[in-house]
Length: 396
Image 1 (cartoon, rainbow, N blue to C red):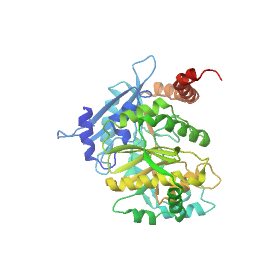
Image 2: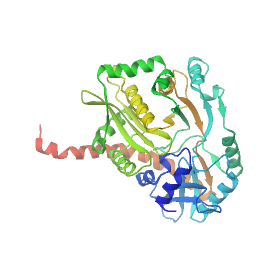
Image 3: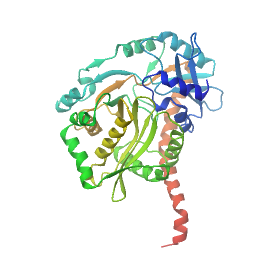
Image 4: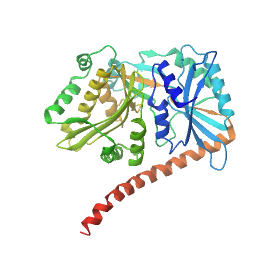
């Protein structure tokens, strides 16, 4: 199906991620050079399900590996799941695919905000599984059982350096709520810090692609401090270029500035009623300014004005213990009043088992090399951008 027809079909689905758009597929072509929008059809002219499928070719062959991030878009509650998955496999087999990774955008379990808050106060609660969920989705359980019976393999952890997803996410409910309602659901310290940032003079402003270097520097600093892979200026420039071309809903980048200095930044995309936080970066050299609180409050106000129903705050590690790395982010998002969700996670289907196994062993080495090379390329790019100024200034 054509990209335009695909975008039109998105209106038929409730929760649609920016990752299931041609714009994001274009932005990720460095890692996934080919992609195709596809549809499942029954009797009518309109597709009953759709997906963006990305491809990576196996070097030296015509074979490919496929990736369906946060998709397919299927009415999971009413669809014949077995038939849909069988049709997908037949399509991939006919297109030289040796295996596919899929991340259904479907919540498996939910822990309400009060439950997570209680768990953070309980010393024996180290992981989300230590807390009884407030809701378990029977449709997700059925999907998981069908996938296992169909040969799909659940991946315990993502293998990619530049991941596009998280198994555990926090979602803030905005539907039928006012700003006062949301503020009332926040921890008093979170509200205080947001107001403190404003009093201290932190200003929130919309950024543009012209600010990409500032964003990348702050993101790199954040990644180095927290131990996650950083991304190049070219990556962010490409992302900005494609997501601002016509993403249904909106794509924005906000900066938190103090006296002109960028202390925090976040990018947000919205296709349907759910907005998603893509990347966030924070400078911790001046912690009393609380730029993150100011940023998120500004985003909440924007999304309420646009009629968004939920705000996906992004992934977290499965950690509740105060001594565990990453638990600070869990606490921050919990104090915002958000609920925790466990999604279906990553699943892979080996279509050509031997070739798939060889490819699976090669990917970690490739990603390890990328994680070493990309920061060097980013540094070289920044140095190159300064060369004219350095040449004019001359040797010191």
